[in-house]
Image 1 (cartoon, helix red, strand yellow):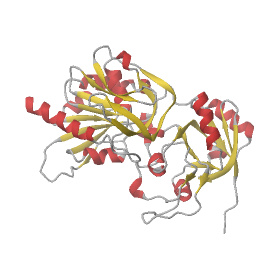
Image 2 (image 1 turned 135 degrees about the vertical axis):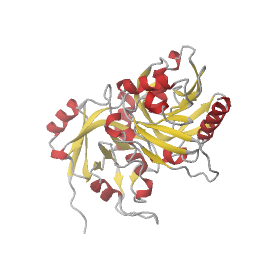
Image 3 (image 1 turned 180 degrees about the vertical axis):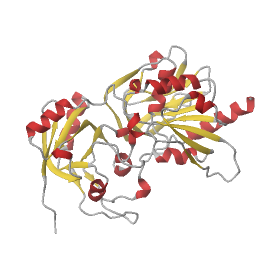
Length: 370
């Protein structure tokens, strides 16, 4: 027996209205608000929804048919979804995959994530692409109530969202190596994806620590390297992390991804800027400026590093071929590097997975000089 249609609407802060139907969990008081962004992946919707980097945001999927292969706990990228909601053109009514445990609608309802389907996502994507990511609100409330909620939504600028997604206490992930490697890595959790931990565990034992952990605490451990994770929001709002990283630079090998890249850049005095609608997808071409190789990459960020602000302290190593955004850098006088894209993917291609091997090599080289 089919479920009755729950009429709903999406209203953006500029007053644009999109009609649809409610899916997933019920929005509190009929209203779910956040910064609306679009993601262009064709598959991997569960990994996207559970990526902590989407805290404070509503995810609109540009691919028109979402949910066809269901969901499985094996594909969760965090302990819970932190996004504010999900927007789709058409939600699959039946799932078909041998790995599937439940359908996407049930998953959203069980995990407390409201959604809206039946939306003209092509129109919505063009709107955001032309005017930029903006606050919005959706749900079963009246259009006037949704418009008021959208106008009151602060977005992600200047807000510390890392504190909402970081772990509460340190925990250890044993290495999966079988060569008795004694390498130890501290991973600063700014909203780290599970697949990053899996990749790091191939290099050594990983101790994940909260974002508030001090440099003295980290350096007081017997470790070979520090990893700076991805995470949500404005890097300028996480000043305490920038100060910690500045104290780590030159003391220990460092590798950063996404927000970690931005925070490492700010730690050496570079600046970050808000992008019009960010990079959210699994097919961005990035050139490795050292090798000249073009890599197809997974991306998820609304802020970017201004490479012109490195002032000789770092060199740009990767560039996005779509718009020229800095996608990677390496410090000139310390064993540290970072990238804006996601070499661990999930979802997305694995063209950049070699960067974990580069981190291993960096740790080996520094350890050999001690």
